[in-house]
Length: 404
Ligand SMILES: CC(C)(COP(=O)(O)OP(=O)(O)OC[C@H]1O[C@@H](n2cnc3c(N)ncnc32)[C@H](O)[C@@H]1OP(=O)(O)O)[C@@H](O)C(=O)NCCC(=O)NCCS
Picture 1 (cartoon, rainbow, N blue to C red):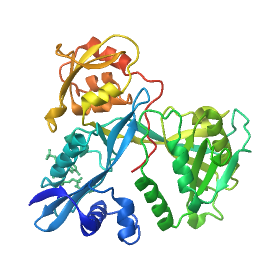
Picture 2: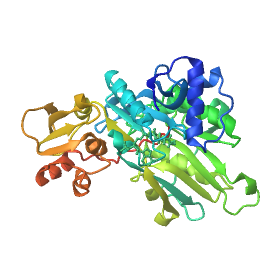
Picture 3: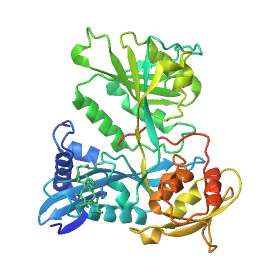
Picture 4: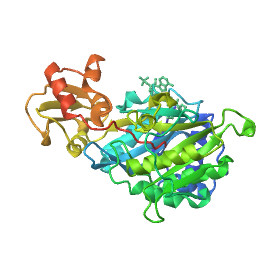
């Protein structure tokens, strides 16, 4: 029985939330003591929700305030939702439902136009208006075959000590000149968590930067896997955890650096956009293969009007789109979309959609025709769906590259 859902306050409640989440997730590696330092690094104040059975905290979720890049390059305020967990003794009693409803409404009231998350289970979030907005792929590079088409100098590459590297990575990440749609701002909480996980994890990690100190134009962070047999293995692998490059020159130089690391046989880039340059960098296209493809950003528009006004539209034509929202009725809107932008209208709608479908299409990673042909639109006019796809066209696929 869920008796109460409310924002948590105080360190004792936050510590309990951290334990509840970890118990619900079952398989997360230990992160050291849940002390004051841990709580300050993990939780943004006043954003952690708890579901109670009497005095017992049985479910939780929290989020970080932030921003996401939308097509056209604007930054939209968003809530990065995470740490969702209900104790196995209290599942399927509506705890998560009550938590999500409270969380989504509060985020909208604070001006956040979208919520995004990464899902460990793909069956839950569509109940709450979220939808998969893009996919992310892993690439595996066979170092024996990989020869770069462009010969680049790696003179501007410097290795920096991982313990001193977090602020530098954060600075380079934040300075990206033209991030693609789907990129999110990384909060100090996110960076602190990476550092904590690295410190607790016991696996070495390396950071190489490109450019002079203070004016770097990229970095890569990577770690080895399979340490037990590393010395004699013929399948040594390094995994790229993070790579940021301001331009193709920096990207190629960072890849060249990875190829220059002698011992590994394979390089795995764990999360890249499906239209990444990587496979095209090599003389032999088959020196790179896609080793995994998975859903990345789950997105839910909280203020559809604000969000659809913030992004840009391509091509020509216009469509009246009506959005409904069963959980946040105040989010319902009817807008005329055209290359000039989005504006509220009383004209009748050519396409009617619930919030999940428009959230899927919002970043440009899912096509309107895919939504139409899979029965995810309400009433729609076929020609209007084609026009929507033209309007939502963007030069690059959306991708975040940030796990949280
Ligand atoms: C996923 C989880 C948070 C759901 O919590 P819950 O309190 O049981 O969810 P609710 O009772 O509010 O149910 C929410 C809805 O989602 C559905 N749902 C929840 N978990 C589901 C699952 N694993 N599979 C299928 N449907 C599920 C429910 O059936 C319900 O839909 P309905 O209202 O149409 O019946 C909980 O099971 C959990 O903590 N799991 C382990 C940790 C985890 O997966 N966290 C997510 C991290 S991304």
